Length: 155
Image (cartoon, rainbow, N blue to C red; front, side, top):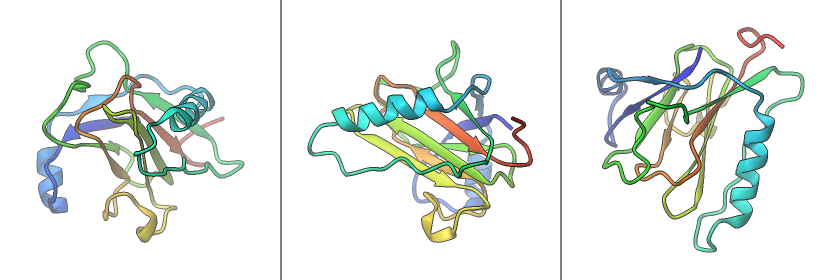
């Protein structure tokens, strides 16, 4: 159920998305999301004034969750300036919630939310699958995917 990442150009259809996601990178093993939530809340407070306002989506109480940071050696994310946005998606196509936190090269924090428990108008990408975008030019903080699911995450 580890999230993966693949490059994508926008806009694209779902069928094209599935074809473009042939190169995937698995995240590091799951850990508690609390340190990552705390880290990204601090980044939001330190963000430049010209960044768009952002809020970290809430994890419902009682729902088990794990964070999967993309910071292990060999993970092919280009922090300096990829030319394309990248999609992080869950290999579990029916995950309840996929929350993705990332920071761009300017220091602005980006959040993404998707999953079967999320209304379509609240999702980051208009897709029935749990996936979301991270910026093309990443900052120093590694992106992290948080999966909250009562059936696939065991406490």
